[in-house]
Structure formats: C-alpha cells, structure tokens
Length: 425
Image 1 (cartoon, rainbow, N blue to C red):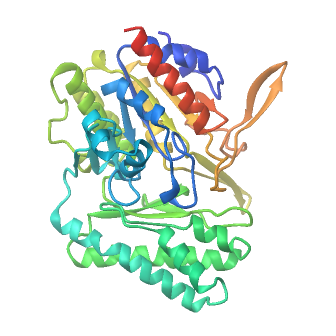
Image 2 (cartoon, helix red, strand yellow):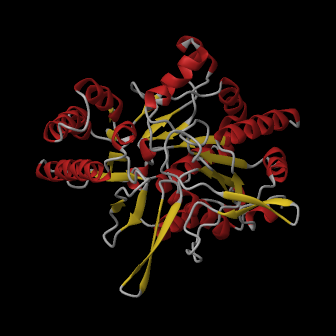
C-alpha cells in the first residue's frame, strides 16, 4: 500500500509522500484534533481564529474527515462561533454546511456539517448537575484571589476570571493560561491555584456521588502525566518556566477520545456500507474502558475488508522520565496520546498501514509544550528530538509524520490535499 512506508516511519518530514497517500487512498478517514492543529493555541479561547480556506477544505472531504476534540462546538467559546465569525455570516455557514463534523467534549457531543448537535447517552440529571459548575468555579477563583490579594489588581482579576471559566454545556472547564501569564513569576502561588482547582473538581465528584451520579463524571487534566494505577489522570504541577496543567475539565464518564474513534468509525461504516457495526444508537458511554476492550469490539463487529486507512492528527503528546530511589519512572500523557495509539493499534489489528501525524503546537501563546527539534543531518532536514522525553526509549506510540512549523504548515498542507483529492475524482 501507498501508506506502508510512512506507517513504519518515525518523525518523517516527507509531507509530499503523505499528501500522495491522502490524495490517492479512496477508503480514507482522517480523525483530527482542533486546538493547536488547525488553530493556534492562545491564552484566551475567545481570541481563537480559524482559516476559512481550511474550513472549506474540510467540507470537500465529506465523510472522510472527522473532528475528535475535548473542546465543544457550542457555547460562547465553542468552535462553531469561531467559524461563524470567520465567515461573518452564521446563517450562510449553516446553509452551506461549513461546520466541522465529528465529536466534541471528548466524544459526548456529536455534530454534523450543518451544525446539528446532539448528546447521545447523556441524561437530564447529568446536564442539570453540569450546569451549576461554571458559576462555582468562578466563585472559587474569586475566593482564591481574596486570600492572595497581593497577586493582581482587582480589574486584572476580573479579566483573568472571565477568560478562565469556560461554561461548556457538557464539559465545564477552568483554563488557567491567562492567569499563569499574569503570575508566572510566582510559581508557588500558581501551584496553590492549581491545587485549589483540583480540590474543587474533586469536590464536584464527591457531590455527584451523593446525588447518585457516581458513575457519571471524570476529570481531564491538560496537559497531564498520564494515569495512575486507578485509571485517574495525574495533574502536572507547574515548575519554573512550565505552566504544567492549565485545563481542568469536568467531563462525562466514557467521553474519552479513544472511545470516540469507535463512534466515528461506526458512522463511517454506515456512510460506506449502509450499516452501523455497533448499532445506530451507539455512544462512547457504552464503550469499553481499555484499549484491549476497544480492539475486541473492533474485532467482533467491524469487517476488516471495509476498514479505512485511518490517519490520526494531534498535537498533545508528552512523557517525563524521573529517577526515584534509583528506579526510573516514566509518565506518558497528553490528551491526544490514547486516541493516536488506538489508531496505531487498529492498523496492526486490521492489517492497515494507519498513520499518526503530529503537529508541533509549541509556537503559540501557550508555553507548556515541548518543541520538536530539527537539524540537518547529511544535508537533509530531520527531526532529531520529538515532543517526549528523549530518555523514554520504549514509548509505544510512534509519531510517523511531523509538522514542526505548527498549525499554519499543517493547514496549508491540508488544503492542498483537499484540492488534489477532489481534482483526482
């Protein structure tokens, strides 16, 4: 297959070769993250912008493209508003089908290209509980600054809180990027804020359990240090010149990107064959919790002959290596890691040369990403160090193709692929 060479590569910069694969492969499904991939990372999510040419390129790919993001489509900070502002005409965007199709909120929020949104498997009781969280986050931030009154002026505090509270419908979030920028020289105080946010989110989980919703929610930290032995994500506390975890997302149980891959495949098979392998009503909340279980579901329900070439695109993958008591401890994290790793595993399971694409998002306003390092080796530009700790030599995730110059480079590439794919018929 055309993709065989790339699927076995590591840190390849052969974008022309990737373009040929995406242009010439008919049975293709691109599953792509948003922030940092097709938009720059910014401190305040309200300032995000997106290229209209990129959006039009997505539309031309039809069922061969799907979003998979922890962000949301709707609400004040949703990506739909960004697209509407880019075209300056919300009615026209809807009529022309220019919304980005796929899964938001980690997989709990479906949307088609016409902006029709649904939340399969989510109960009214869960939505009611989620609705009160943004205001309580806001109150906790006010309380923190009252006890740390020397950190910021009052008017700056209000600006930071407004930028930090993301009142998402099914994944209310506190994003600390703006606050970190304002107090980055006070690392201990910023860590105290991270701990206060973690304690508040933990309290929400306890309250949910008392209301009979103990199996309804979980917490996503971005970036994180992977998961502990109980499966819970680990906060990455700040260090000097590193903001650590900035996003504390209160999310619906089961709404994880790797489960979203199966939901997206289920819909793709319907487009291709007229049948849903997992049933029309399948949602991520029904999916197994482990990669082994997810692969078994693939094995039991999806015809491997119809399996598309999967191309996963993300920007959030990390690892850290620490020595404790003479032992090496490796922590692997990043909100895109698990879905990219599942796409890689599905390729092996179904004998498809699936491709993992990494976009370096370290160039924007948010300074918590490790850049990839490029240099010339024997006259050829190569990636000499990836986004993870170079001492992590046994990382199971292979980043096949890298876009070291960030989302602009990737978006230009994507537009060329969409154009050439349509031209080739």
